[in-house]
Image 1: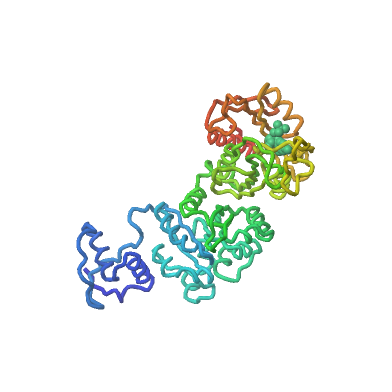
Image 2: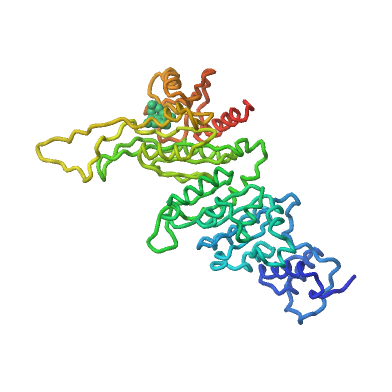
Amino acid sequence: MASITIRQLDESLKQQLRLRAASHGRSMEDEVRTILRAAAGATEATPVRASPRRNERVAVERPPPVSTPGLSVTRKRILLIIGGGIAAYKSLDLIRRLRERHMAVRCILTAAAQEFITPLSAGALAGERAFTDLFDAASELDVGHIRLARDTDAIVVAPATADLMAKMAGGHADDLASAVLLASNRPILIAPAMNPAMWAHGATQRNLAQLIHDGVVTIGPNAGEMAEAGEAGVGRMAEPLEIAAATEALFGEAGERPLAGKRVVVTSGPTHEPIDPVRYIANRSSGRQGHAIAAAAAAAGAAVTLVSGPVNIPDPPGVRIVKVESARAMFEAVEAALPADCAVFAAAVADWRVATPGREKIKKQKGKGPPPLALVENPDILATIAHRKTQRPPLVVGFAAETENVIQNAKVKLARKGCDWIVANDVSPETGIMGGESNTVHLVTADGVETWPSQSKDDVARALVAKIAGALTGDQA
Ligand code: C5P
């Protein structure tokens, strides 16, 4: 048996051993003992004796692997790019969540990220040193930005700051993170995180649209409290568990991700049409069906933009969500999300809006009765998009919520709206469909009518997405 000291190990092994020891809170010598004991079949419960003197000899036949035991050789490799934002602390948890899912993680920290967390903590959790510099001779000779970009199965950017998104959208390559992103031909998932005003800014939204167009998958941001006192809105980074799940979803088999590379726009929920600053016209739509379709399309690999009216359900994972109030705002958001391969109009858009909403709250006036409310028609989003000459999505799907003659009315609607399919359902109060959990639908197309069994809205969504995938890929079910 050969006998060597830790000093004699080569640099990269030493570095890996150092990180592994740091992550376990042990000295390097104790770490070697633990590894040897595990290799010899001893249990972790065996007490670790006090640290030996520096350079004490430890017997090593062959340095053991430092990867977590039990991981298969097919485990996916993730390059996690950590941007500079307060959410960077959550990325440390993300490293653990990814490793729990048997993914190997390698980290790059931008200069700004290092203001929030250290390469040592990221490296210790990942079990491999974290990379930081584009012009670091050691790492360029050792790994190099092109190899970093290629020696991975996917890249996750979390937090994706407004600046990092802008660099990605503009094709910049002036630091290690942006150079790797530009050099990569692997799937990229971004988890944006920023102040709500920065997220809502036209520049960020343009960059986001460009990134989605380029095939980048997004998760979040979520709505909620910001780190800055008193700030709230959309901009919180998605939770590590959500990001880990979205990362895993990147690797579905080709058959499980039939919409990979396709862009899908979905409308969902009701619209609110103002009467005055405090009152509005609305309807009972919960958004459940539209949100489920957006989630199912994202799970099938599509880049999804969900344009949602006001709802009280969580944002579906893995989709870009644009929140609107009125029909007109929904229309603008849909137009901005084009071009797309498919548009699904599941929103219950108010047909009318108040012609001139009160600028102030309309007062009750004694003896005068209720004020007259003149209504005007809202734009028909579905019909307008379906009749477009340019940028009409190749597949346009409408919904028809009917309370009588469901199929007959749906057929008329299919022709009148100019769409390709209508998903029709009976929303009479006794069905409990409006706002409920399940749905019974008929798929009305030029080829005829399919009546689907009563099933959950998630199952309806999956079945519809499977049909959409069949139509877009020519692989009809
Ligand atoms: O005409 P009706 O409201 O029944 O049509 C329902 C279908 O049309 C749904 O797909 C709905 O999302 C869409 N729609 C629309 N814009 C409107 C009204 C309905 O996109 N203003």
